[in-house]
Amino acid sequence: MFSDKCAGLTDDHVRARLIKSFNRFCRLNIAPQRLAAMNAGDFRRQEIDISVPPDDIIVFLGHLRGFYEGLIADPDCHFFNVWIDPGSPGVVHWSEAWLKGGCGWTRERQRQKEEFRPFFEGTRQLS
Image (cartoon, rainbow, N blue to C red; front, side):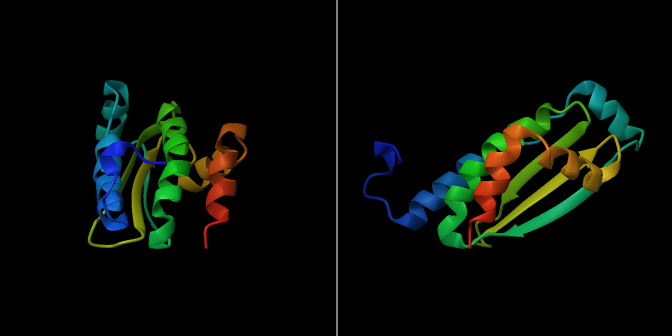
C-alpha cells in the first residue's frame, strides 16, 4: 500500500509521515474574491472535531481527500481547512466557511452529491 520509502518503518512512523504530508496538502487556499467576502464578514464558519480510531486514521484520510477536493471546488466554499495534531491520535479537526445557507445547509447539499458518496459510506463503516 505504501511506497518503498516507508519500508521498515513502524506504523507510528508511517502514520506520522502521512499526517505531516496530509497537513501540508490541506493548507488554507483562498481565492481573492473569496477573501474579499471573508473580510466583509459575509460567511458562516464552523469548527468540527472528528474522532477516528487511531488504527483507522489512514483509511479515513484516504476517504477525506476526494471529499476535501470537491468541497474546496464549490463556489460557495470560502475555505475548508483540515489538520491533525500529532499529539492527539485519532482526532481530525476541520474549519469551514460558506457563503450561502450556513454549514448545516451546505452539508446536506453535499450529502446529495454522488461524488461524495464514497466518503460518507466509507467513513460510516469505521468503528
